[in-house]
Amino acid sequence: MIGKTLKFAAILALGVTLNGPTAWAAAPESDDPIIIVQNNWTSQLVLSTVVGKVLEGMGYTVEFAPSDSQLQFKAIADGDMHFQVEAWEGSMKTAFEKAVAEDGMVDAGAHKAVTREEWWVPQYVADKCPGLPDWKALDKCAEIFATAETKPKGRFVGPPADWGKNYSERVGALKMNFEAINVGQAATLWAELDAAVAKEQPIVLFNWTPNFIEAKTPGMFIDFPDPAKVPECKEDPNLCGAPRSGWLKKAAWSGLAEKYPEAWKVMQNIDFDNSQIAAASLLVDVDGMTTEEAADKWIADNTAVIESWKK
Ligand code: TMO
Image (tube, rainbow, N blue to C red; front, side, top):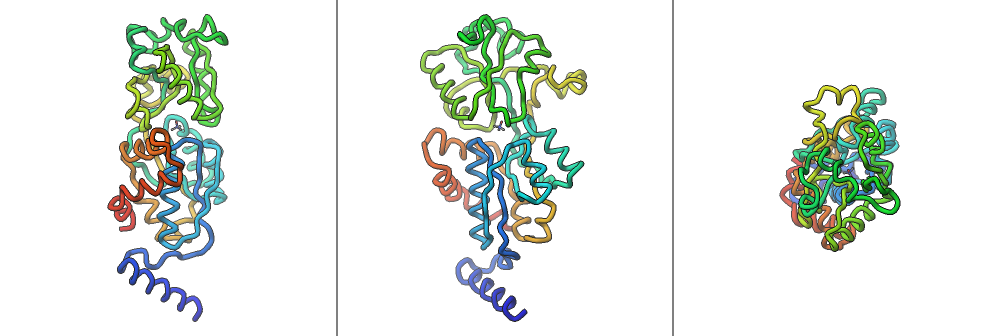
């Protein structure tokens, strides 16, 4: 008891001398690690590192754990991992909502950001394929996207399998003249895009917003039937596109509120807008920083934002 009181007093004194009296002088309430989930795309890696660094700055012990973007939600529900900063509606809604409804995972709130994950073409493709961004127009031009592997069908450069969407099913449901070829990792998407852009060759690939691409390569998402408007989408989502204005949420273990109340307050307050997320990916994918460097730069560029999380 005495030891605990002394430790508390020492932390409080440190908080006061180094930072002035703050709302989080009571942290950390436990030295057990807070486990933050990391996935395999850039903004998530940078922003999860940002959150980890902020919590470490408050005195918490933080660990990072890589996870599959579909299986992570059950692990968070079970308390094997504790916090996910970027859950995307287009690719993760089903697994996210199942974990909330059946396993007790906590929906830790939506960011301001409005998201979209969809087939995408660079702008010059519109000159080679009239009628874009309509999906039927794209389908009429399928042959210009053919490769040796897919001809006479067009190639759709699809996402890594763990992003939860199998576009072969959509191609089948809509009877498109395309073949979906998935990449193994995000870097391959950008390498394929760069190679096509250099020669202005037709390419259609999986992309999303917010992302660094919008600052680098002009282009457009393909409009598939809109799930907000077309009733058949409820019965068979494969007949339709992903949401055009999707949510971005945080996911949390239900034990956080009780075990680490000050950290939990920060997690609830975190609220990224589109430009903050795009900036995180740009620092790595355009400027060439490491995840660690990008997180430090993002923190330096957003000190007021971070202070607002602690209130
Ligand atoms: C999950 N992602 C944002 C890469 O589409």
